[in-house]
Amino acid sequence: MVKVNNISKSFKDVQALDDVTFSAEKGELYGIIGPDGAGKTTLFRIMTTLTIPDKGTVFINNKSIIKNYMEIRKTIGYMPGKFALYQDLTVEENLNFFASVFNADVNDNYDLIKGIYSHIAPFKKRKAGNLSGGMKQKLALSCALIHKPEVLFLDEPTTGVDPVSRKEFWDMLAGLKEMGITIIVSTPYMDEASRCDRIALIKNGKFLQVDTPNNIIEKFNSNLIAVKTYNMRRILDDLRKCTNIKSAFAFGSEIHALIDDYSNIENVSLFLNNLKYNDIEIHKIKPNIEDCFIWSR
Image 1: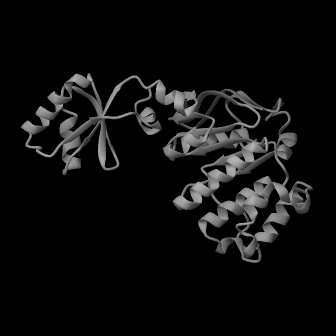
Image 2: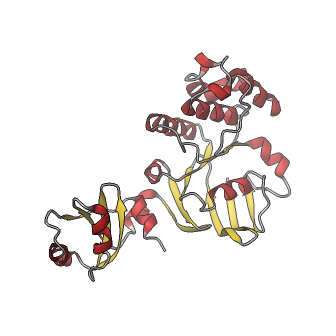
Image 3: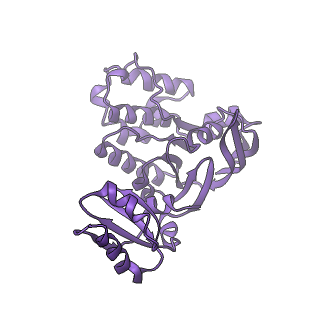
């Protein structure tokens, strides 16, 4: 359905994308996972025919984004990272406007958005600019779907949204996937990766790994430990000085570190005890997607 081949794009001295290649199949929920500045938005603007790559090709349903861009725009839906609807129009007016742009009728395609739009229907007379973040998100998704696209592109749709709305949004995506819509979504939230069929980890414009979330975790072949104590800031610097520790990063309330061998956990403990840490907790852990991202090369 979507085939991206060797895409590169630079802006003056900044290499936004560097030889990116991947494909997404019909009905697949494909996640592009990475931090701000990794190149996600540039890639989405290329895939949605808004930016031309320096090199490489993109085909959507066997149509080129260069030669067939007008045809492609009729068959895709795009939800950019920033709220891009008309804030001085009401919810209802926005939906009707975007349907008219594609010569679609809201009533004909209402079943497609019913589960989403029903959350904001009680506020259909409210101006879009006065909606909450979660409501704006649902309206934007409804407008992106109202013409019944074959492929849906969502660029960081849950950024800045509360945890409950984030979960609701991903539940909606699962429902759209069941309808056969191909969904390509980007996010900086590593915990959302598990909701995707396949993911690509992106850093500095390059794809580091492409696979199912479970397979990426299974491929992690380093010895990972978690370390916890009362002075987390100071222990991180000290832990990195230990000869048995290859690398260490703060992860929430603990530190995740790569150790040369699990048999040397006691050596790490003794090293920290000698530095006057007396309440250390160290144990083996299984990696998550964030660990895989941090230590990808």
